[in-house]
Image (tube, rainbow, N blue to C red; front, side, top):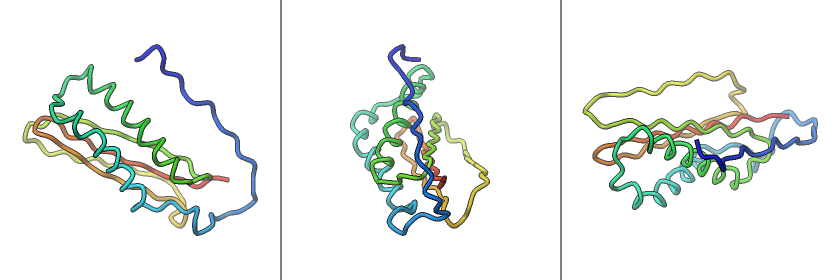
Length: 133
């Protein structure tokens, strides 16, 4: 792990006593998927020759999750907790299923996902947005 890596301080938000977000504050999966794909497009040139090496992939995974999280936060989901899960695997002709389970409010919480691959590596990114008070 990078010695310079410091987690962000936890932000405390005052309670608004609202049980549901306004329409413009809802977690929209289509917007989030586009944000993930924008990050992929930005990294495409850098990842063209990416091969599976556990030491390199660890950093790629961490940096990608941080970048996606910042991009999604910039979309303005002020009262959503944003969770980013990045999975990276080696292309060897195998199948892979990534499954997750969450306990959430189906009216206010949601997720988005996107995948990317080259000839030797696949990347799957899941972003969860859970509304909190």
